[in-house]
Amino acid sequence: MTDPVLVEEHADRVVIRLNRPEVRNAIDLATVEALHEACRTLEATPRVALLAGSGGTFAAGADIAQLRERRREDALAGINSGIFERIHKLPMPVIALIDGYALGGGAELAYACDFRIGTPTVRIGNPEPGLGILAAAGAAWRLKELVGEPLAKEILLAGRVLDADEALSARLLNEVVPAEELDAAGHRLADRIAGQAPLAVRLTKSVFHAPRDAHPLIDDVAQAVLFETQEKHDRMTSFLERRSRSDEEKR
Image (cartoon, rainbow, N blue to C red; front, side):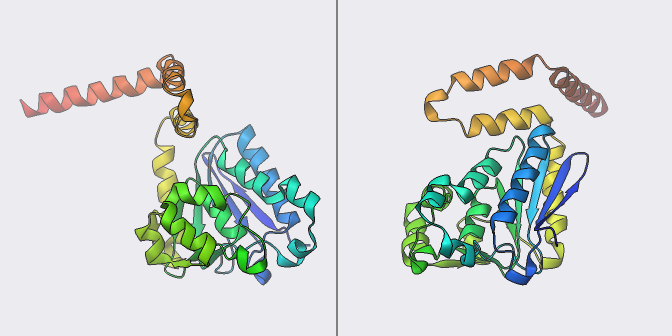
């Protein structure tokens, strides 16, 4: 049996690839379970994650054959919403690499990521009401935060599907690159993140997503932790030494 998700581990990043190209990477229960396992790996050893599809598609949606048979208890169990929220809360940033379709659950998976890089063939949206359901795995509230209420309502209530240019204009995509450059673009962004102090990145992500009432206390506490790290001292010392050398060269 083919693994529904392929995981490639590196020292500072993990590449997670949906691997059901024969059904456009439709997200079924086996995919959800495999994504949970990948999250356990990233929670145990925090690293940047790159999340991609295979076969020219990110994820065309949830597996409709399985979805049709799900009942009230399945909805209340939050099968898809649970894994997407877990991905959203991973310690280090997650980069979605989107080629082709990202619809329904596939779009909600992309929304849960911190960054989204796409190709010119991207089509992203939430057609769930056309199937008699709603986008209940994050889009109904997360999309408004990403693109604003008017456009979110067009997507969620009127079935609008954005192409790559529209998604880029709305900043739903951070960048659009040719398909053959998609992985490289993701790794370039991962390189930039990996060049930062890892704990500073982790705490910044946590502070960013903290509720408004937690500020400014959470900012001060996180900063207090970072002020005590050796990495902070070393990086600031290096910065001051570089500036001193630069000043001397100008004299």
